Structure formats: structure tokens, C-alpha cells
Length: 482
Ligand code: SF4
Ligand code: SF4
Image (cartoon, rainbow, N blue to C red; front, top):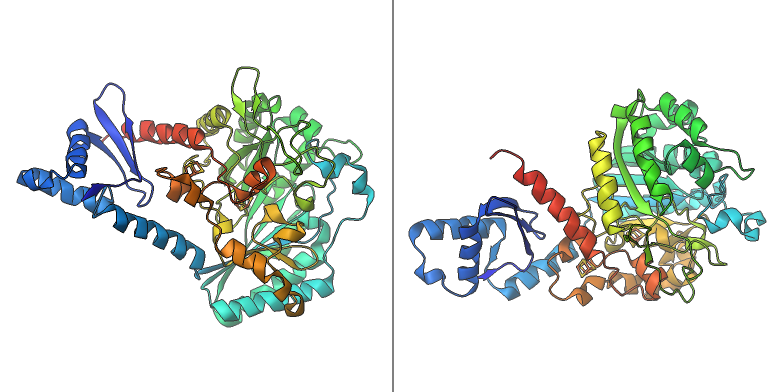
């Protein structure tokens, strides 16, 4: 028997106790120091000399995954974990970019300030939507999943409502006739989120809307204005007030060195809104500006904040290219949500910890900062569909010809077999050695690795931030009476 290599032990101050977390089984326990010693004895092959009470403890620790049969057995369990995740056929997830057009001119998004934005961005036609519908029905038939989630994303997805409505209605009928449970989510800047839109989509399974607010009113209006420069905060909040009684809302926020300080004011404002209890989750990720953050030839991207903290950018924001192929930077590159592209990887260590604490203190749910992966990229039956029908493994790779894994039109599909095969074998975590966090990380965001390191197969590591988050979880566990 061996100690699991996926256990992380956090000493709890003043008690002599430890918080043990196993990332493969997700077991979390608070134990006395002699239990930690016991695990060490087992790992040193001393199990044969244990008394009955210790043997019983070993049995319980084995059931929780803190002790394993052998290193080989645990390696196999890890392979099985990733294989099961990749092959999971219980849920077909499709993120659909209805358009790359956007009515905002976000300060950090190249789409807003680059002369190329005058060029009409790609927009799905109803004919293309019909092809996407054909393909989604084929996937339902081939896979037979009990669940189907359709997420509308962009650009700004609500700029193409005919496609949203057409596919929502069609797929609802398709799912009903196949006995599949369907839900719809929307990731939007919130400006066009009217009661009429929500009412129209509720009968087809609309269950959640994710809206971006980048700080308090002044900060948000500076970072996320309309193309004419007008502020958007008040209108978005007015829309949220109207739709919140009908649909669950979640809030995503992007922050940079200057704007992070405005979050407490945003949280206080939201807490006082009548819809505060309808907010399912608030999550944040960092943005950064700089001359070396472009996708091509990305250089050093870790920046220092005024107080010495580190801010780690996730994506290009001021290269002379359309960042993320025109995908909205609001949500791409932020991981592991259920049904949304991702809420992961935008970790900025100390600053993320502070934002989590502020969010919780305001009475809102947020990510725990530890269970950040493996993201949708590791799931075979999770697709992103671009406006012209190209398929990508995740939203962050949209628009990159080299990362296309197929097309909804079968005749155009075979050309992408090699890329699909490459993503089938994608496993950046294999380069992570003995890291105990592999099952809750998966090697991090591959879009970030692609942008920041020029190698999407490399891990994009935010281990220090995850360990800070584990400390927060340990403190919370220690404060709960046994
Ligand atoms: S690779 Fe990054 S952007 Fe893509 S789904 Fe994963 S966390 Fe999100
Ligand atoms: S990317 Fe970092 S934290 Fe994630 S599994 Fe690899 S080494 Fe661990």
C-alpha cells in the first residue's frame, strides 16, 4: 500500500490538526497529526505492524482514497479518470457563436478599437443555422445522451436573435422527440437582454444567463462602453432587474490592476438589488494590457501590481490581430463551468483570493478556486460551433484555422481529422509530473498556454493560486464544528 500522490495536506493553525484533500476522489477530511503519521507509516511499508485500531483507520483512509494499493494502480485510476471524462456520453454540450459582431467596444478587446472592426464580422445565416441544426440532431442520434446543453455565445449572441430562436425551437423539438433533457444558457453583455427575449426562450429550456460586469458603474462604463462611447452599466442593471424573476443570472467580471479595487462597490450595489438572491454565481478573471501579449510571438506576460501581486493574463488584448479569433473575451478562457464555456483559468493568485473573499463576504456564491478543471477541452462531446459552421474544441480556439476539428457540413469535415485526433490525445497534464492537483486542474487552460507560451500542449500552471484556494477551503472546513 502507498499514500496517494493526489493528497495535499494543509496544517491547521493552533490545533495540531491537518486538512487532507484528495484531488482524485475529492475526499476532504480534518485529521489529527497521528493520522498523517499513520499514512506515512503505510507509505513506508509498515502496515504489517499496525494495531487493530490503526488498521481500521487505514481501511477508512483507503476507502477515501488517501491510501492506495500501489503507485501503478493509482496511475491507472488517473488514466481511467481522464478517459471517462473524455468519453462521457451523458451530456452533449454545444456552444454556438451566433455572430462575432458586438455592439460594445470593450477597452481590453481588440475588436473594439482595431480598425478591422469596421469590417463586417462573421454572422450565422438561417441557412447555416439549419445546417448546424442537422448536425446537432445527428450528434444526438449518434450519442444518445440523456442531456443536451446549448449555449449561445459570440461576439454578442443576441445580435442574431433569428438564429437563437430558430435553433432553440428546433432543438427543443428534437430533444423532446428523443427523450433528451435540454437546457439553454446565454453568455451576453446584457444590453439586449429583454423580457421579450427571456419569455421567448423560457419554453425551450432557458435556465441561465451569464452577464459581464467589470466593476462599479464608472469602471464598467470605462471598460465596456458602446461603440459610441456611451456607458452601459445602468441599462444592463435595468435589464437584470426585469429578467431576474424569470431566469437565474450569473455574473462574470474581468479585472485588471486598476479596476479590481472597484469590485467591493459593485458587490455592495448588487447586494442591494432586489434580484440579489437570483444571482447564482459571481466569478472573475484577469485582463491585462501590454505590448507583448499578442498571440504571435507572445513574450513575458506576468505583470506586477502596485502592491507587488502578480496578475497573469489569459489572452491577447492588444496585438494587431483579432483576439481569440473574434470570440468574445468576456467568457472564453475562463474554464470548467457546467454548461458555459468556462470559468476556470483566469487566476491571478493573490488578487483572485481577495476577490473570492469579497464576493463571499457579500453573500454571493463564487468559484472555490481549486476545482478549476479539467475543462471542456478534455470532453469529446463538447463542441464550439463558429458562425460559419466550423467546429472547435473550445471557445478560446474559435477562428483559428489550425485548431478546427471539423465542420457541421459532412463534406467539409474530413479535412480536419488530423486536428481532431490531436485534441483527442490532448493531455498537457502529462508534463506535470507528480503534481497532486492534476485531477482538479488537467494542466490548466490550453488557450492560455497557446497565447502565452506559444505551445498549447504545455501546462498553463496556476498552482500557487490553487494552493491558496485550498488553504481557504481548509480554513472553512476547520471552522465547521465536527
Ligand atoms: S482550454 Fe481554456 S478557454 Fe478552452 S475550455 Fe479550457 S479553460 Fe476554457
Ligand atoms: S498545470 Fe500546474 S497545478 Fe495544474 S496539474 Fe500541472 S503542475 Fe499541477
